[in-house]
Image (cartoon, rainbow, N blue to C red):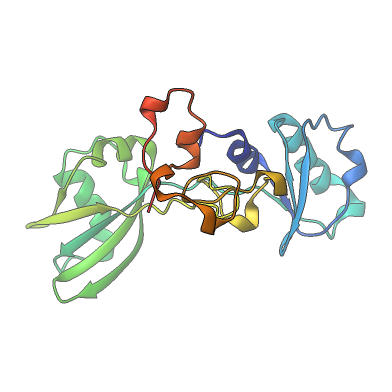
Length: 219
């Protein structure tokens, strides 16, 4: 899903709750390091995944850094919304019925029930899936749950940054320099009022060398 280097760096980044430990970055083998402060602390991004791992271990083991906590951003799993489930089906049964009644070759552990709520047309459930379950469910329009053929919709939220116009993160986690900021409608570097609607394009497509594969921008 994420193709740009900037996004990959953010996904590999380590989040720090306080500022410090910057003098050790070279010793830990970090390359192409970018530092940026946000409300939670400091974001450290690098092309060296191994170096970031060593930084996290160093923070955890060093007694002088007890006030600093390191954490990695969690990968977002795909979500589906299933509507019109019978009210008499308990929440604990939903995942088991999805797997058993729809010939999904996956373990129950590969599907996690996130939340449910009741409405006029029955119960709605939001589930999170692993890759194996997602591949089997992504093209389906309905799933059998109990006696009902329930409509199913992709519920995955894809964040889009309003600073660099790329997907995969929001502006608070954007690793781009100020010179890289782009208008989201056309992915070009200019003030938004100067955008030409005929030139609309998403940032990821604009970076493709083959112009025939470009698609319109996300509304």
